[in-house]
Image 1 (cartoon, rainbow, N blue to C red):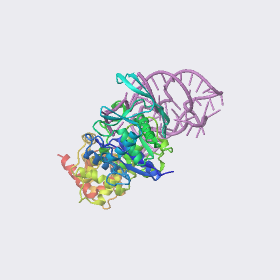
Image 2 (cartoon, helix red, strand yellow; image 1 turned 180 degrees about the vertical axis):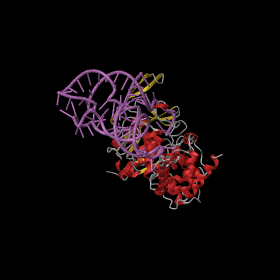
Image 3 (cartoon, chains in turn cyan, blue; image 1 turned 90 degrees about the vertical axis):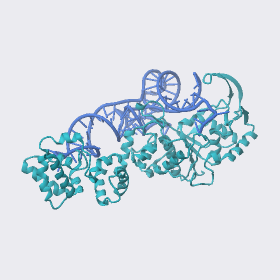
Image 4 (cartoon, rainbow, N blue to C red; image 1 turned 90 degrees about the horizontal axis):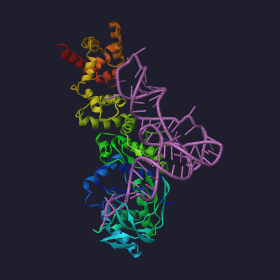
Length: 459
RNA sequence: GCCCCGUUCGUCUAGCCCGGCCUAGGACACAUGGUUUUCAUCCAUGCGACAGGGGUUCGAAUCCCCUACGGGGUGCCA
């Protein structure tokens, strides 16, 4: 069997959408799994809608996701150029082949591909006019996901527009031939196009590649009907990047939209994905995007990160809010983050969750304040501050002992102090595990914040 | 209108190809309880689906047909 060559052929007309990313991912996974080549080809034949910025965003997005290409822009390859806008000569050559074979004709300044078969005219309800149709032979597509699909093309179609630009169907097929593409893995929206493409392959006398049409990603039903569009919340991969989602979580989640392993495992690294990926295991029905599940997968990946990696990603989120900088003590930073890692489910929420570790000017949660400040709150802090202040060995265990003995002395539960102290130290009633949090904050910070609390609340 | 594709818990899905092991499994979400030392974590339990109708068969989520619903296409967009 010849070497697998797959391609991802986006047209850079705007932001990169999650469905586009999935197409890229599946192609990439298949190439990596089979030891084949992943080709990136830019379909920029629509000059008005293509921008340099969109192209850059696309390339950045792929790299961020970890999808490197073996051939394509910025890396080159033996089948270039990889921009359709630069492949004019190739298209001319192939056009000539069709002309010579008598499979083209000109009409209204455009060049049409001529189907084979009896011709007749018929009223078409969609076009609301009499149109010419062809009694052509049906085309059978052996789709890896859907099995046999039979479809008949019944109208000639444009391959070169009247402005001289070759059309999508034509360049797509020509490039797949010229680039030696063996497998075409694309969205179901291309399924009806495939009969056109197969007609073209046949006209060139070339065996078509193996097709696999994957299901569409549909909108969250709450957001409406139909396939997910760029304007839908959560649709853009750029958004995940900005929100400090982990790229491996995004690829993991996106891979699960329409595909699954057979072993009930969901949280998978990109290597594990590669190992398990099978085209035949792709689902036929459309998948709906669910941001809650996306967040969950992200959290699972966050928890699995080694602390050095976690702290790298966390630091980037913390820096945005100016909570840490180069002068932040690394040991302290990591100790604090270790406590956050098991609790907080997204990097975008990390700054507000962890701010009190890095600044005395943390926000006061009013709801927590109301809840905590009932009763003898200030007295509780006054009671606990002196013994903490004189504690020599500042460890979670010793701190606990202080609370326990004070509780015994006052005949109260330790719970009488915990929430108030937490509030005095962090401005809220939830956060990392309590005792470890005190240990990490350190005696100096703890005592000073407790004192501040007493001062401001005992008027 | 016509053509193509699809339809298992609210959502992602396993099972379907090779009918019985399915009183349909897992995950997210949700609900309740626990973690009597906090908590957005963690643990436990619960809720919850084979679109409908006909066949075939001893037996169907699994095979066949019809209907309904959903999606895509029907462009000198890609």
